[in-house]
Length: 378
Image (cartoon, rainbow, N blue to C red; front, side, top):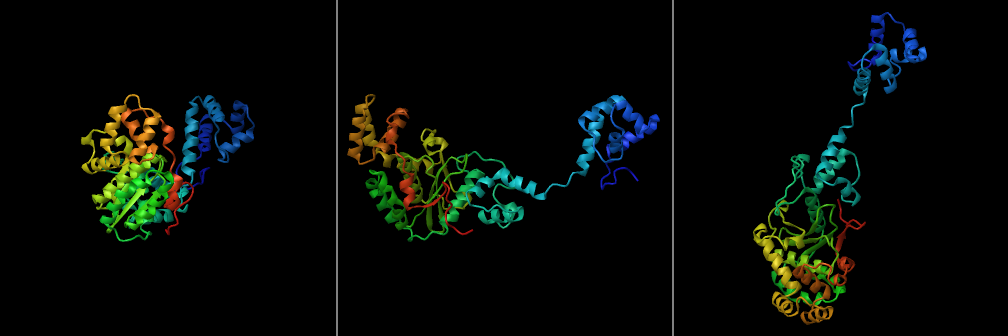
């Protein structure tokens, strides 16, 4: 029987040493003398009870006039052949994590930390798929870059918005009520605290409004899609600035008015880096996005008023001028500053007026993130 009575065909390196000793007519004691090591150490290797260390590989190489790598490779081959088979779940977890931010989804409470079988089942439920292979992007992990398409990370955020919105109850959607609300929105845009009323006002129009903290590298601002005949507006509030809040909200409401996003959820247009899209070449944006951008900018500061003020005051626009203009058009100064910064390309100008707003908005919203998962069943 061979020295290594293991279940593999790769013998222990001790067998090669024993064969070499026989070929040379050496005893284990002779080899121990040559190596300058105790005979017991040689016996442990030859009998397969001890492996060959890097130091011993070098010593054996000198003794037998071969490279040290020869013995090192014998030892590595033996160890690899006897290594335990890895948990099959490793490859499956790697496949999921390679496409979706699974660990972050677990941290956020979207998924439970569980064995791979239950984790895959949770992913299927999360993405409304009846098979692991039907989870979007999982079979083919190529990332998309077109503006109208979403990345897997953005899709995970989108499905979380859908999951939360599906459990919300609002009035039947009314286009007439929404148009009336939009006409009335300026009165909410003067004082940051007034934004706490927006979620209820949207619900009265039949819109499900959800705030979900963005995922790392997703760069999501908002989304509009429909659940049957009920529109959903999701926002991330990732910039936490009054000017950004109003621009994104009005942008998404324009999508609602135009009934954008009424197709499959995977085709919903997730709005990413909306502020950057304002400087994009018009042909780079779909018509629906250009219309929504124009409506949002016009709400923040009526374009005729902005242009008139700019022509009269630029390049010497004082803080007093800005404050007077904001009072006249009935907007918070931070909203006016945001639009003037873009026009002047001076993003540090009076930036202190762009106050934080998230704590006001979330006071009346269904919120998921910032350490607290939304109370939805899974």
